[in-house]
Image (cartoon, rainbow, N blue to C red):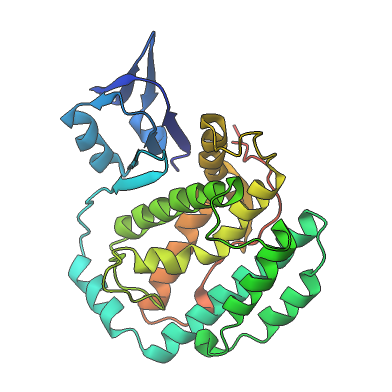
Length: 301
């Protein structure tokens, strides 16, 4: 299982040296491609060769580019031709609507449950109310409990007057963390032969990642928890070290039905379980993450 995230925030040249990524700066660092899940290019003076892009495709690596605001503005995803791509496309298109609505309800219950866990982990009030919202979610979340929970949750977490459109440190950090998760999930969907455009619930014609936006929902509170525990900078700016730490959330432990694992591994397990739902299963087959804290995953030797 790939596990390493590479964030480059200074001028550099990236090239391929056999099975390794070479990052040329004052000194040259080498990272095996097979160890990399994500590369983030966070400086305007970074150049890379075509063989590096080719290797990202071969090894299933997501490559993020950032814009003038230093937030992810684009992602290069591996093509990874799947042996049964047409079959998976048909399964996505033919998924019975009741199954899709029940799967979405399961996702929203878990998301709201993780929001409640986040409040408990940071010592905020309101977790019991969120648990109540989660229990009341029905097929397709027709009552929009997700929206009601979000309106209550973010105020409990960040204080009265907070809303997601404000230009402030917390929102910049949340957006950055969500973007990294979203691109990583899209990579996993492509690797499993699923088309990210076709969502269970999200269905915008202008969104190429509708399904990624479905899968990300129960993972979002992990970013919320981390941002809440980050001390805002005196200038209210999101600094390079903050961005590195947000990318590092991919290696944080999270609970799964099969046990504690890294977020990267949990994304793979969630997508595999979603594929089983498409392949004739029910929403009960979904394996979704449970927020347990911010401990970094440790590899067992």
